[in-house]
Every structure is written in structure tokens, then in C-alpha cells.
Image 1 (tube, rainbow, N blue to C red):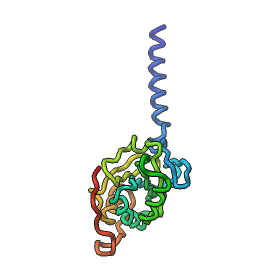
Image 2 (image 1 turned 180 degrees about the horizontal axis):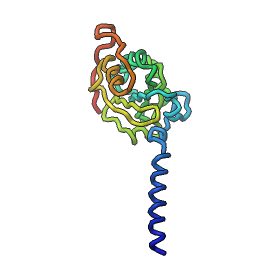
Image 3 (image 1 turned 45 degrees about the vertical axis):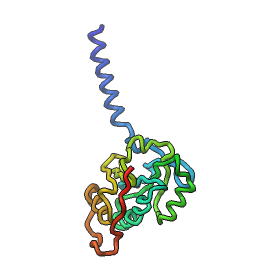
Length: 187
């Protein structure tokens, strides 16, 4: 009897592992954040077949505010393939009203939220602020970087072009009016 049960048990265990791993959502799909409307949202609501570019920030971070024009330039040239969400990862210091004020003063016109559950930071810790994360439309992690790699609008576009297929090089040259540099802030 034991000889018959052992192979059956092994088969069932292996089958369940394969089934669970093939149907589990990505880590990103498990994470919710509080939007500026006060409601909880899931990142998967925002892909629409596009890659997600998550900008992690805190309202007290000066370089986070300085990065906004570079992100806006990147959206102007890659908005067809990238959806941007700026996410405060400092829920202990950032309230809905302080994040709204930060977004308005930085000229942020894209989706903004707060990682009130601290799940994004648990799954994808930022080593510095601002920090950036790129995810494929299915929620698969693609790349992370910080401002040490991107100090100009062109840098942001080049990074997107490097890590997202089918992007192109139709952006202006260095002297086209892009914001040039920003200061680096390490945590």
C-alpha cells in the first residue's frame, strides 16, 4: 500500500506546485496603494497594456521634486508605451493633503499615490530617493534605478529605451531645452 501511495503523493505535490506557480499573480498585482481620491487602487488598474514606471518619492525629498520635469519629458516621448505612477513611500510623514500639495507644486500631472500598506516598499525596496522601477504590462519586474543613473531627461528616456522593447530614438538632442541635471540625495 505504501508503495502505491508514495508515487501518487509525489505526483500530487508536484502538480500542485506547478499549478500554484502558474496561476499566482505577480508581486505587483498583490500591492495596493491609496490614490489621491482616497481610495485603494491596484497597480494592475493602470497598465492598459503599457509598461509601468513607478517613481518612488517622499514629500520632504528635494531631488524628488526636481525629477518631475524629467519624468514629464519622458512621458512626452514614451507615454505611448509607459504609464507613470509616482508613489510616496513615506506614509508616516506624507498625508493625502501633503502629497497633493507636493504633486501640484512639482507640476505632476500623472497618477500619484501613497504606499499606505508599505507593501511596495516590502517587495521592492528603494535604496535612494527618488527611486524608479519598471514593470512589464503583466506585472513582471524589469529594471530598477536611481537618480545616480538619471540626471537629465535624456537619461530617463535612454533607460526606458534600453529596457522596454520597441521604443525608438525620436527625442531631441541635448541642447533642445530638456532640464539638464539635478542633485543626488542618498538615504
